[in-house]
Length: 135
Image (tube, rainbow, N blue to C red; front, side, top):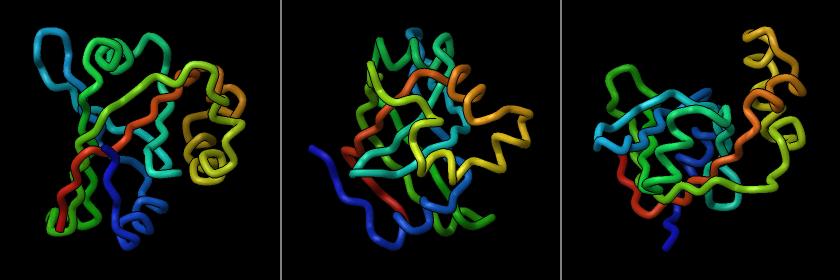
């Protein structure tokens, strides 16, 4: 069952550069990682390198969490628990206009082009929220 994210938070997420994405390793250890993302059609879209630990974690256990705070004191936060899935056959990042637009400057800052970034970060992950809490 998917849940709604308020219009107010959806607007903040459009401009947020990253969120903390927590997956769980096979030994039960949580693994938080900052990730780039876009919010679209009721889910988060994240791209990853194919051999990243988070991809292995999701294949074994799709339960994940995303965390975001817009304020330095975390008084304005959003925590999303959800189900992650690897999207086989998904368009690459450079074929997702909203992603390319949001991260154009960031992609340049890591000395990549949208095409080289899409080749390196070729695994698409969809996170569908199941529970949301925030201030």
